[in-house]
Amino acid sequence: MNIDNLIDNERTIFLQTYNRLPIIIESARGNIIWDEDGTEYRDFIAGLAVNILGHSHPAVVDAAIRQTYKYMHVSNYFYQRIQIEFAMALTQISGYDRVFLTNSGTEANEGAIKLCRSWGFDKDKTEIIAFTGGFHGRTYGPLSLTERPQYKEKMGPFLNNMRIVEYNNSQALEEAVSEKTAGVLFEFIQGEGGLCSVTDEFIETICRLKDKYDFLIITDEIQTGIGRTGKFMASEHWNIKPDIATIAKGIGGGLPLGAILTREHLANVWKIGNHGSTFGGNAVACATGLAVINELQRGIMRNSLVVSDYFMLHLQAIAEDFPNCVEEIRGKGMMLGIVLKFEASILCRILLEEKKIITNATAGNVLRLLPPLITTKEDIICFVLAIRECLQNLFTEII
Image (cartoon, rainbow, N blue to C red; front, side, top):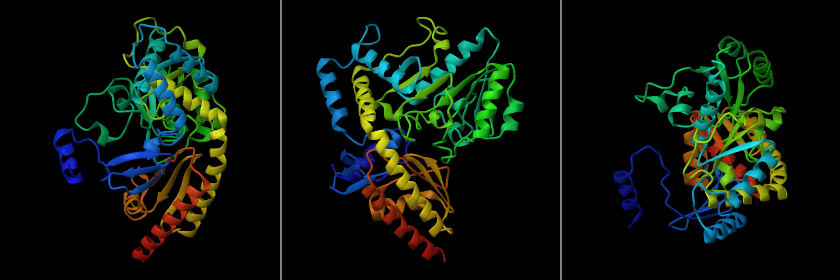
C-alpha cells in the first residue's frame, strides 16, 4: 500500500479530529524520526512533550520488555510490586505524599476536579476557577474549565460552577474567589496558551486568597512536569507546593501514564469505590515510568539545564537579529516558545519541508519547542542555523 492510499484509508476510517503532518513514521530513536522513505527528521516536539528521554530510550525499552515478559495487565484488584515501587519513586522525586495513577493527563485532571469537589462538598464549596489561555483536556470536566470556543463548539452544556478568569490578573481573581471556591486550577507555563508563564505577583495573590478563603491549589503539570522546565516539577521554580498536581506526558517514557499527586491532608477524602481506573497504573507503563525517574536522577535533568540555557541564549540572539519577525522568547528549560509577528504554522511548514525539523504552532503565532532532555548543543546549533536561514528568507519576502 503506497503512502497516498494509506492516507486515503485513514481519512475514510478515522473520525477526522487530527490535522496530521504528511509523514508516515517508520521508526524513531533519540531525537530523530525516519519516515517510510528513509527521510530523517530532527524532532523538536518529542511526541508533544511525551518522549522526555527521546524516542526508544534503551532504559525505557528494556524496562518495558522485562515487565512484558512477567505480565502486562492484571487490574487494580491486586497489589503489584512495580506499581508500588513506581509510586514510591514518584512521591520521593516530586515531594508529594499520595498518588492516584491514570492513563493520561485528561484523566488526571478529571480526577483532580472530582477530588476537589469531594473535599469541598461538606464545606459547601463547589466552584472551581481556571484561567484564560489554559488547557486541561477534552473530557467534560477539564473542558468546562477551558475557554477556547473551537474546543467546545456544539458540545454544551458544560459543568456548572466552573469559572474562567483572566490569567495573571490579580484583581479579576480577587473578584472571582469566594467562600464557595473549592479550588483554583492553573498551569505555571501555558502549553496551549502560547508559553505564557505565571507571574510571581499572581502566585502571591493565589496563596493569599487561599489563606483567606480556604480552597485547594491545583496545578496542571502535564506539560511542564517531569523535568521539562529544568526541575522535576515547575512549581519548584516558584517555591510553592500546591495541594494537588497532575502529571502525564513525559512520565511514561512513551507509554500512556499519568497521575494525581496530593499532599497528605487529602489522603482520606476518597473512600474505596469513589474513583477508579481499569488501566490506570498499568504494569508496563509503571515499569517505563520508573525507568524515566531513574534516568532523570542519573543526571539527564541537570545536563538539560545547561543545554536549555545555551538554547535560550541563541533564541534571544535570533529575536534581536530579526525584530521584524520575532516578538519575544518565552518559557523555561526545554519548554520554549518563539513569539512571531506572523502565523507560526507558516514557519512550521517551512522547517518541516525544507529543513526536516519538526516543530509545533500554538496560540496562532507561537512556535512551540519541546525537545527531549537528551538534546545536545550540536542539535541546538542545527536548529538555530536552520531557523535563521528560514527567517532570513521570510524577511526578504516580506520586504
